[in-house]
Length: 316
Image: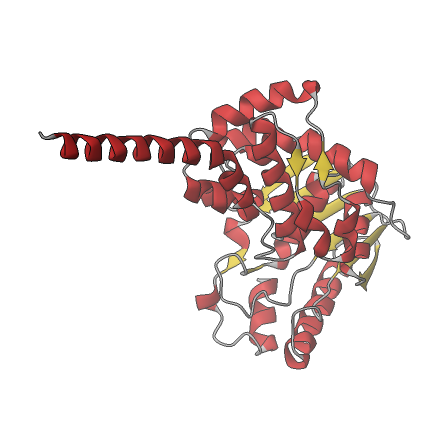
């Protein structure tokens, strides 16, 4: 090899080494700038993102930075966006580092807005951290609620996602029977905010379903039952502070119940539950209730706006 080729080879090797060093230095920056809150889903998904992104910072014992969270919905502005790392989080850091190190980038980005559903274990580790955030930053609701049933009917069930299927009324009744063992049930609010993401026709159909659920439960439960709906902020605070929250499937109500100290009965799909989540992620008062046997698949409903046919299936 002549001197010219040797010099060229040395230059190439040096350039490669410099590039590797630059990439190594920028790795942390790249990792966290790509974990910015995307708001790819609704408010509950954003809260999940906030917790999971914070977990990645804690895993590396870094100060938490979630600046873009404040631009989404008014009440998110209460969440702290700059949090100094604390020594008391070392135990979480160790667990999170062990968990995240086994996850691919696809897993990381999936967990970011869906860990409330898929349960990788990140939210399990972060539960006490998140509950302290909710207690220290979110105000109390304007109105006291005994029992809240979060009845989701807006994007669900008109969007035929597997996550947006309706459950039979008997699921709610079973949840109330479980709740009786933990709280005195005097008043039930069916939180049904179907106008947020529906057109007029769909909202009217949802109103029929919500009132039929109220009638169904009134025939079987001795309690005052009403239908309510407020702003996203008011509804989240009401769910987080109710004596008991019942929800078959919703990221918003999950993140409200997950961050509270009260009874929270929520639907679980066996396909998405891992042993870690069941054994270690549930605080006292957080009760999973399998929804699989109660789900009405989209394919079993010929026409979602044919409310008489749908109600018959919901009551079956």
